[in-house]
Image (cartoon, rainbow, N blue to C red; front, side):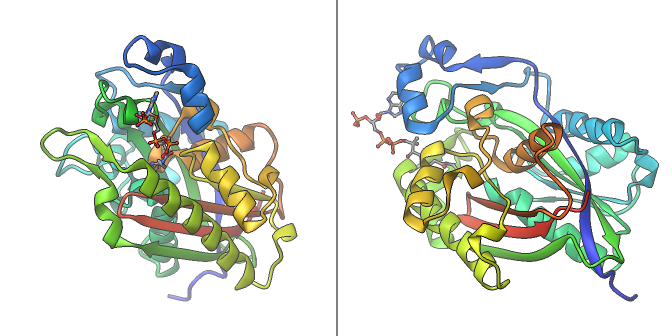
Amino acid sequence: MKPPKSIQITAIGSYAPPKVVTNYDLSHMVDTSDAWIHSHTGIRERHVADEEESTSNLAYRAIEDLLESYNLKASNIDGIVCATATPDYPGFPSVACMIAEQFGITGPALDVSAGCTGFIYALEVARAMIATGSMKNALVVGAEKLSGVVDWKDRNTCVLFGDGAGCALLEPSEEETGFIDTLLKAEAAGTKALTIHPEKHAIEMDGRAVYSFAVRTIGSTIETLVKRNNLAMEDIDWIVPHQANQRIIQACSKRYGIPEEKFYMNIDRFANTSAASIPLALREMDRAGLLKKGQKILMVGFGAGLTYGGTLLTWTY
Ligand code: UT7
């Protein structure tokens, strides 16, 4: 099969559960305060799923949003790649298979596990499968129910995370536009800095180590993708980073000389939603009319693994 000239994002959707937990609410649960959380992270509140709402339920709602908003039918979707660190079941079925069953999608369906970099990794998996003809098109989903894997008594971690889901439709095209370049990496020596403890079933993190790793890898990923595609920073319209900490972005902007206003941030209202954070941000930008045809968008993520990566593309609608 002749590979398509390009692969594009042609639609986006998202969902955040309605329940909002503020920093003030958390200050009644652990020894913390709105002042500490906001000054150290930029977070004010997060969405938290009900007990019976699972990661696949969040993903289902995000896809519903995409289909309804773009007037599309599930029968036109061929495959699903879902990035998640919080699948409904530890083994099978995968979240992707659960969604495929609910929407009657019969092409390839698989989950990708790359922590908070999951959405970037999943985009590349889907892009490669479309390029080889294994899928006609794909829904790439990032969905997380992190509230189910945080220790609500540990102030070091419970204030940082939230729940949500986002998705993008990837389609082949004969126009020379869409995805330009992707960088994917892992520094597995840092694995222990961020894990979900198997017995306690709760996130454990060396915050300082992840912080330094994030500032360094976000900056170097952006620089590499810009330089090796013969672009200048001014050519990039938006950087959409994984939303983990506003201070990480400020430090990165200062160290690498990247204007802070290029980074789209919504961490104040969602906290860290891991693999869902980038598509949640994209959908918000889409709704606000910030994404325009021809713009250069650079998405960049980092997280458990430790993994990191970025993708550069031209927005096509
Ligand atoms: O998606 C990737 C996942 N993770 C990340 O991106 C996290 C990266 N790291 C970070 O964002 C930051 O390291 C944190 C926000 C986690 C922590 O900020 P920090 O400025 O590095 O604080 P710290 O860990 O050095 O802690 C400073 C103090 C400690 O008290 P002592 O030992 O100085 O007395 C903590 O016990 O702040 C204390 N502390 C808190 N105080 C009030 C930690 N969490 C809280 C809290 N409320 N929620």
